Length: 136
Image (tube, rainbow, N blue to C red; front, side):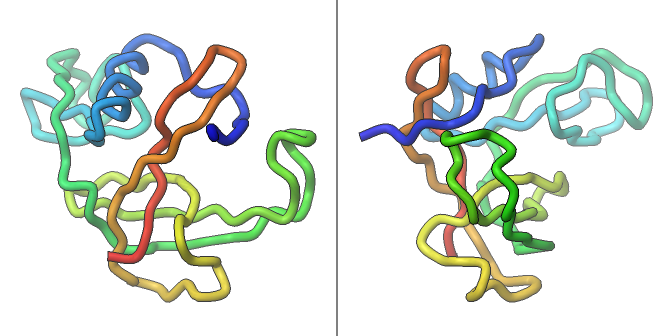
């Protein structure tokens, strides 16, 4: 059964990201001029200003950079408190905010290797697959 989640990002370029998730791929933009990998999705490169951005599949591997547990109900009943959030530094560079899968923040260690997994979710727009991270 799909987890209920807050609304996902749906701006320009986001559909490509979500289609990759549906296919089990973590797609991140890469600048064709300077090689920078911006995240979240942007229209022009943050480093050089180029609009020569293309989505590429990344490994989905990374390390735990930070974590916190939310105790306030920011999303009403969609995300009952407390819930854990993590920041992953992907091997390719970008930092990715997500949720732990298969471990709790109480088990988190700085630099712990993690890998992407995808879980079935649903928001007001319908079903989607959400990238989360588990111990590698």
